[in-house]
Length: 312
Image 1 (cartoon, rainbow, N blue to C red):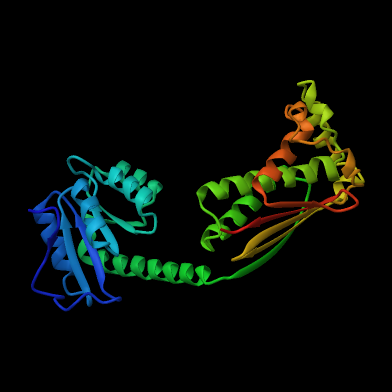
Image 2 (cartoon, rainbow, N blue to C red; image 1 turned 180 degrees about the horizontal axis):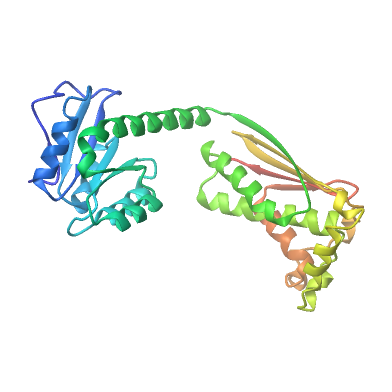
């Protein structure tokens, strides 16, 4: 059998937008025939076949299936390895496992790796079509949602954070996700913006709201972190909040971070681009922010920073 075998005798009209392309992956010709017989009467459906994971990857590249139905125990590349490859290269392609007795452990690993659902082979007759219809419906809804999100031309968000550093990565991840959906940056830009945001948010928490000096980091002790934990529970530090405003547009992105601390004299900030200051703890964050952003503005009180990144 060839790597891709388009079954004939049904669904012979030209492929339309609503056509469902199902790829069946199984090394057993008999099991493939059983699966095909169950699915062949689904409307607007074309069935494709592959006898192992390698052939399946070739088929995916050539026919862009709507859904993959795969066995687990196969030569060359088993179902778990196939799921991992698909999730890496085609993260939105849903996969349903067809499990036989003795493959339970492998099935659990494949589900954890990203498969959308599973159907025991002994229950295919009763559960295959309902499972396929459910997963295809969910996938279509997600694709429509992504299309709507890609139509967004402006997005505004405001956060009011407690002085908890563990919240920072989640705020950054949310912003990065929206920027990627709006195609405002590539993966490298995502990383650089994430670094700049992390530096500004942690600076607002530690140096702004908690009034901790960078000098506490210089001696290599844990005094900085210990004092941070103490002040998070003490007034007035515990009542202060970090205010973050994010504006995403197709032309530029802006981030405004304001703490409720006493501020500081901007003129006293050491020049982070001066080689003599590169190794100082107080200069690293600002150096990264200025390097990764197109424009950086501090307010007169020294408790707010505005960072602007223009889109290509």
